View: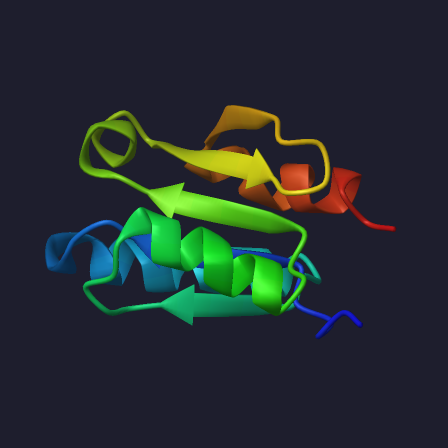
Length: 98
């Protein structure tokens, strides 16, 4: 049974926590239900956590992508991973509505 969480936002290190919170806020404003992981966790743990709570996406906030104004988003239903510009997250979230 789904927890109703659309996306889990994961910051890969402490320097990215502010960015992760800003990204989560942007997704919430676009209508998504979001869980934010602001702990030093391994990526594998985040994917297991996301699977346990049945979220649809994992949004990975990584240093290189963030420097380029992007995040990586993995669709847990299809396994596809893509890069999305941070300023386009609201339109991305709109396009993912069920």
